[in-house]
Structures are given as structure tokens and as C-alpha cells.
Length: 157
Image (cartoon, rainbow, N blue to C red; front, side, top):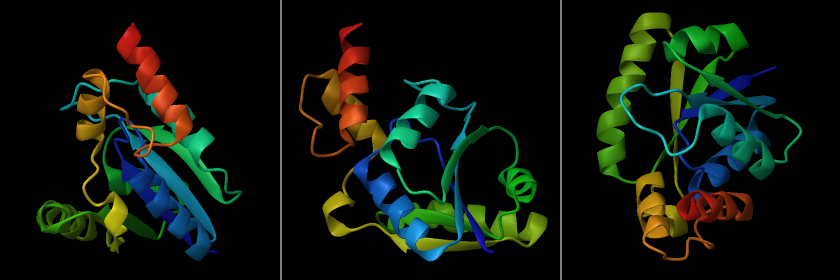
């Protein structure tokens, strides 16, 4: 059984994230979506809220969502993952992600696979979604419905 780990901050989850997770679910026996508690960022949603949004957006039986902090390679070992999967939108993502993948390989030997984002989601980032939503723009076509609702509620508060 092959377990893939799909890590990210997912603040908030976008249709691009869900697409990558969906494709992993069709390839791997088990997919663990790892919601990172990134101390260098000030998230809009708590790790519990992001996890709940992902669970509602990823209905596949072989997908689990879990939050973590610390080293990715330690979490990967704890959940039995043999591969990390990262979605890439552009070469700028690759430049950053290749360094992380090489460090993870150095630390533990874990393999990272890159999945190119579908063109219709390539321009979407969580940061842009948050900004558009905060300024009153519609993000309904960019995120799952449950995420659009959560953004609307957060921006009204």
C-alpha cells in the first residue's frame, strides 16, 4: 500500500488544491493531506478550520486530513508516507519546491513528486483568493462552495 502525503498551508483550500488531491486519490492507495501550522505566516483560518474545510471538500474514501507542525519528514514517517506530492502552478513554485524536496530527500530519503496544476487553476493562490474575497469580489469559481461560504462569513466578522 502506497501512502502519499500532500502538504500545504491550505489557507484557504482552493480548487487547485482539491484538483491535486483528487488526482492523488486516483493514483495512490492512501492520501494524507497535511495541513501545516506555518509559524512564519498569520493564517486567516485556524488549523482546525482549514482541516474541516478540506474534509468537506475532499470526499474520497482514501483521503485523510491531519494537521501538523515540525519537520515534514517526521510527519511523513509518522503516517507511513513513502512519497510527498506537491502541486506546481509555475516555474516560481518549482524553484522553491525543488529546494524543499532536495532537503527532505537529504533528511530522510523521501521522494517528492510534482503535479502540474490544471491550466484553469494555475493563476489561483490562497493569498489572491483571500484578497479578492476581502475586497468584496466573488471567489465562487475559485474555491469549493464550503470555502466560499467560510470566507464570506470571516470577511463579515
